[in-house]
Image 1: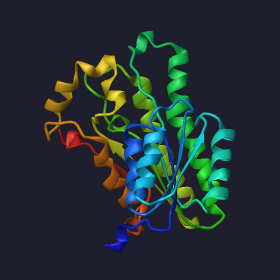
Image 2: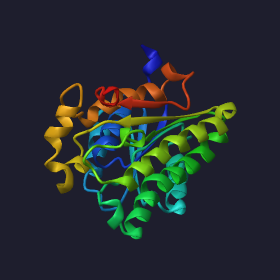
Image 3: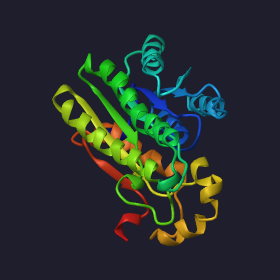
Image 4: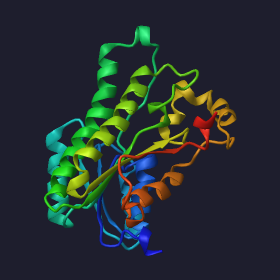
Length: 254
């Protein structure tokens, strides 16, 4: 099944130090790609990600910064290409989550969410796209959430939902801008997933509700996002762009 091979690809994964980003980074290496990780300098899991990538026999590279700074991500792409070669695939997984009632939501909290989850994805795509467009070839996957198309019962997170909805439409917009230039852009929208975000205090008590309300009666594990990412980045998805792929255990069917 060489359609799903990423052999010879140079990948960048933002937010690769934990959660979904970490699982995908390791999964891309298992599929044959050399993988560069971009994450905050304080991210504790980056070393584990690198070790797991190198254990597959693939090369790993780490560059630190924040997705909210255009210069950081642009510099990261430049360094990756100098170290590894031409960037050809990317997954933008860096993001944050928190909750507050809309009527009490401070502007600074709203703005931080938009800055990281939406502007950060745009700046990442912009830097990655500039590199890929020079060669007329590439594929990008952005990690959104089912919260970009539904409102989660019991969670007061209008700012998070809005940011993820923005990621979906941004991705479709970029897919159409670049469709004739050899770049594909798609989205993975996970359902409830057992990441550090869903272990934060304000949602910890609702995990049983999340499981009960999901048709599969459980939350996903981060590794279940690897297959969809490999598919969307591989030749198996050569005719797929502008798609929001729900990986939600059937949640939106209910």
